[in-house]
Image 1 (cartoon, rainbow, N blue to C red):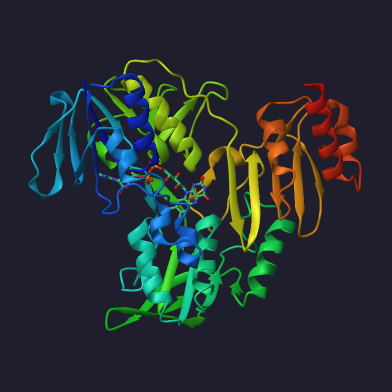
Image 2: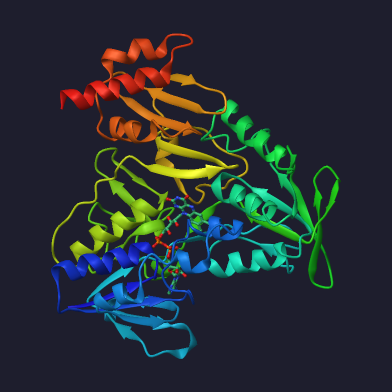
Length: 434
Ligand SMILES: Cc1cc2nc3c(=O)[nH]c(=O)nc-3n(C[C@H](O)[C@H](O)[C@H](O)COP(=O)(O)OP(=O)(O)OC[C@H]3O[C@@H](n4cnc5c(N)ncnc54)[C@H](O)[C@@H]3O)c2cc1C
């Protein structure tokens, strides 16, 4: 069997590992256009702040990769010829044939569509080269404007602040990440940013990036205000790279549509990771995630199916541990709804599932160490844990295990309930009874 994987991210690597667990002899080729190959994209945030060296971003050693026995082709696939099972490349490389193909090409930042967005110094954060560019600007220690929402915008703010750059953070609405965080949580984050010296601008809409000698020199806002800066960093959402699939006539929506076996409408072609919009038999919806864990699990499932071992991907409760303005934050299950004016669709480190909130009640506690639970009829549907993380592991188990919380439901929903203590006690009891 001749397997080809387009994309050298975590979904692609997980697929190769899964194929090799079934088929030791088949030929595997991975094609990637990122000069750095496979590395941790979530780690780029820590690389920006200087907490991680670039060498620490590589989760596999070259020896690990060698053992998987695959050929790596540096290049960019430009066309899939489905009728001939062939791939065409940019730069005139010889076309490559496949028996089973995995498209694992990820997602890319939505462009900032204002005049001047093509000037030098207007940057996004998709990959390592972007991070290196941002660091180059940041080391000059001048002024930056950050535009957008979600986790990546904050990572940009924090990365720049840690290098002494003066940051203006522009928000279109009246608070940060309004469709995932509640108002109190948004204010916690905003307050921390202000303490770090970040200047927040609410109801701020960029209409132009101005330039001098081809370089960004400032941004003009809808209000007429002008902010002088040399760097404009933006994170206004991402979109799945569906171009190859579209050209090949595969079924697409917001991502490449695949069933629970990660198979497209062409039985020889699979898709996994940020590019895939995966059917979830439980909710009967096709959902996009931009999370490392699901990308790895989808790649694993796709690899097994490609190698002829049927394996259904059952979406786990989405779970992300991240850092918002220096505070460790865990987001589990469904926690919010509505739209966020700072983001177009999904953001990095985000799941559409977080916002499919059915009717439920809210139990909450804490000021800076914040705990918010979404309480359903018999189970917890979601949780946000900010600061103290003692309860994030138990809550992940309680939510993903659909544990019956009827016994504590009423207590949780009482005014001024000690929500954290109630959950801790419940968890201790649940462990003892198992
Ligand atoms: C800054 C940042 C912060 C993040 N933070 C978090 C977080 O806190 N938590 C979390 O869970 N997730 C986070 N994520 C998201 C997570 O990294 C992704 O969900 C995951 O990397 C997706 O893996 P993938 O294999 O689907 O795609 P990718 O890792 O995007 O890999 C796709 C690869 O395909 C290549 N490619 C694209 N087109 C072609 C082509 N035509 N030919 C050849 N190669 C091609 C790309 O260059 C890329 O190397 C973050 C991502 C970023 C960028």
